[in-house]
Image (cartoon, rainbow, N blue to C red; front, side):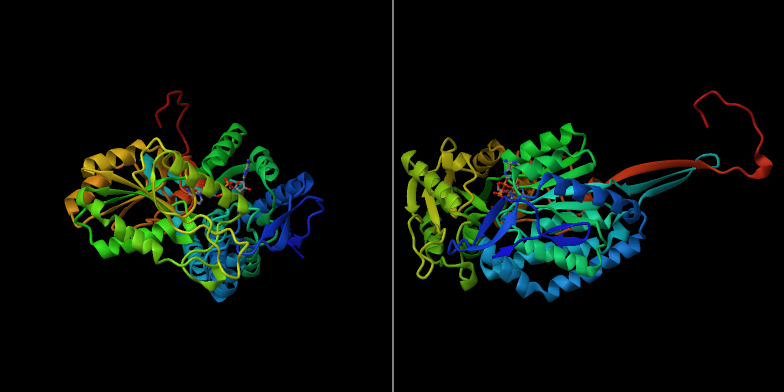
Length: 495
Ligand code: NAD
């Protein structure tokens, strides 16, 4: 049995713990590896070595730091097939989607390789006579990252490349449900030249997360995961004086106007509602059909019925959910939808996949006549379940979206520039797609979920991550000519 290692002080080692968590293949329930609950003393050792490494890493030339990420991006490309295969075996998503997961992280690595263009301060000459002021963006120290199960490649890569490129050292705590692809990415980072102690990995669940949030030598925590845990992490980390950012749960609405390009819209909607078995924080899980777009209901159902569910490695349309518990939760929520009066148009419960009878499969599921008081609307289902609502007008649809507390993503489908402009201006959601279903920004921008989907002002990659992982230091300097070194005591604040 493979035992997942931890990385402390540049060494991949097995934990001394006697608590091991099973990692299972979601398509079969086979236990494929075990991951440790890292002990307190191992966590402390990881932080101590990261703290020591920071003293030299922060002064390592920015060009040296950047070049590591040039090499790293090449290594990730070289190992793309292997990474996707590992990811699918433990997470369940299709191979094509697993490659996308790695690729979206790779884009952040490419961005980190340009760090010297990003970590540039300001300079103003002669703020007073002979006085200059400049600011530099200095790294914070030891930072930590806590990641969810649904993007085990992309989300760790949102975090440690930018943190390390800006001169920090980093402790990563991957999801205990699928840490193996994350570990392979970490091995490649070490191969690319990340020095001893600059990147460490500890494992486990709540105990590890709490220890990282409380540790006095950790300066910042980046978290991606569910709303409940994110709120806990934000509160705990902030209380102990850390900078914290938490990207959390979502309920993303698509608004479809009757003038939208029908075929394009339906294809994109089906992909975004059911792809990755709905286990994306940017999944479109609610669609509001405006006016005559309400007539498209059977076409939406037909698209969903055309999707094939199978083990991820068979590379069809949808893989299994991450765990039997996740499957039971999703099926329970579908049951509440029926009980609370929504119309079940397509029921994905109880499906079996030949050859994978024990898999955590739920097929595409569609509810019509969903109302805002139902549990299927109020909770993030995180499964392949689409809730359909109707609205008389764009304004009425926007009222529904703005009335939902979450603010991760939303999309409008229309051929009207005026409608799209109104939507973009007045919708209170941090990431908007116009005729585009999952508008996750590339790293020249930043991930910008908002309201209940995010705590902390700054996003996890892009320009905002450079700010998150650095402290601005402002220097005001005057140099005297020897000949001018006269003058007298000045007790006022003027210069
Ligand atoms: P999760 O909150 O259960 O786990 C996230 C991390 O927190 C894991 O590393 C886990 O070990 C740890 N954790 C779990 N329970 C904990 C506890 N009680 N105390 C402290 N730490 C704990 O999330 P998940 O199920 O792995 O991921 C799915 C969730 O993540 C969804 O809600 C999804 O919307 C969200 N997500 C959000 C974004 C975003 O950018 N907004 C991106 C991806 C996923």
